[in-house]
Amino acid sequence: GRYTEGDYPFFSYYHLTWMLMLILSGTLEDVLDALKGTEFMACYYRLMGASVGADCCLFGLAFEYDLLSIGDCSAVGWECDTTCHTVENMIIKLVPTHLEAYT
Image 1 (tube, rainbow, N blue to C red):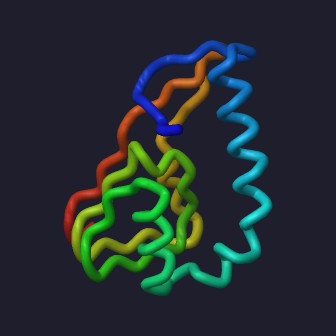
Image 2 (tube, helix red, strand yellow):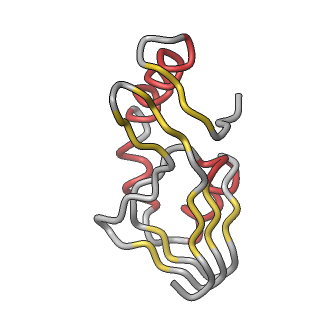
């Protein structure tokens, strides 16, 4: 499926599927760590649905790729969190995250 912008209550069907995908993505952590900072990581982001410009260096954390847009010549550092969600008052809020070119 695809992630869509919106507010989703905890323990709803959407929350449960979101958590399942979060857990499953954790199984790829070692592989993704090896790809960080390479062109292969940008390819992985694109395959997962993110819009990634040319000449990007990606080390950070991402999860809801469908909502992520990264401009040309951008760098995402080791501890940078580019996930597209927040949790407030037991509500998962998904919103697009945009990084402009040269950020």
